[in-house]
Length: 307
Length: 307
Image (cartoon, rainbow over all chains, first blue to last red; front, side):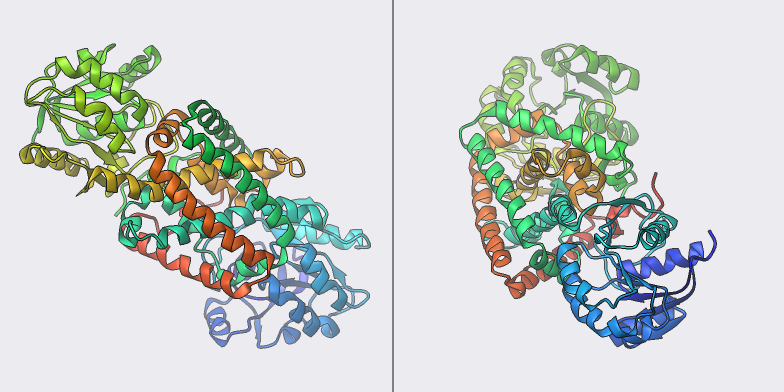
């Protein structure tokens, strides 16, 4: 891959921003990476890790002269960042983001984009439960999907360039409307995180079972839930505040289905339980066949003795 | 470890039974392993894999002369198995099980145990989402907890012998009452499985999001839920039918907590969301510190490029 961009600005140097730095270095996608983080501690760590060729204490400073600007801050912070950088953006620059919701991001960011700048919202479906500048790695996007939600008037050439960029980072790329993205992610990501957070909270608040028991015996299934419930709380607060309607719709269906399951347990309806449980296996097989999951049991973590 | 038992009978040769066979071989815990499975296909596979020194088409045949009998069939089948083997058990034999519920197992099994036989219920908190005779491996129990729920009149020496057996298999051993076990497992295992099954079913039934989209974009969190929802449906049907009260109690609390979370989303209460999400991280740290989980991000599965 030849260098795609003279100058790329990473606004936010957490898990996604730092992973983008690593993969851009490995694939030589930029001559110069300009980085910005709000906190002094993150900037210092980013300096130690060599995440950027220049580090900037303001987002406006980092985007100056950038050909590609990638906004990697929590969704709730995007409006303010867009307002700050709007006037400094180079004509012809591509601005994208990595937020887990898209309609709210367009609402907050688009009004600040000057004419001649290409704002193309995006969302790499990739992550871990860790956060911060030291959590990134170049393989994060490998074989994961990245969804772009171009606006009706987006320049096709700019969209194509951004698509090529994500493919160069290892991703598969798909296009859809912001509204459909928000509905899809509400079920594939937002609802599971909400349920996981809720399960962990319910367990922590029990009187008859101690937290120490929950921790000791978590290998029965609970520990899986704690992984996604360990994700960045600011990022997830912003997701739920900014994808409210889709999340509430999925939550309504989830609760309705759960009531039916609860009733089957109460009345000892084994046939209904079996039918529902049996169906679930095929979905996992399809996810493995689609290359989105390891086929190893227990995600591969039990293959060797632990501890 | 010297040979602990002259003859051990494994009744059921699925994930747990076959894993016990592997670890008993590795640690030389039995001179002779007698195996029984109900289906001819499982027996044949067990023969190919060398899981037992003798294979038996009846449970009664397998337990004859056994010093230790381990019942590794779904909880709903235990009563019938106990009835079948009762009269064939050797005086002084230890009979245990590996079921995920304990009060119902005692209810179903204890009445069939003749005087002089030591029935000590047990539950290794270990497993994967896979099942069948080929799914077992010797390390399954390594560093996992095994809970024993001796009866008030259990012989302390027999309990001690069974405890030593599980430690020799790599487990840590804890004692508690059957009732407390069922409450602890309701939150650490049964509720998470129920929630995971329900989430997968809700996703599969959507009209506005296709199953193909759910599969493609599952890396956002959903795929984690599909792992435990891929577990053996017969085993799990039996768990819910036999731990009804404790599961319904946990489910009631979960739904109550979820309603509060739903309300916080509807009313845009970011502070409550943040406070709840922030709390959850510490639980995972404790599980990792307790040696019950890998510290690697994404369970270690994202450390190398996939696909």
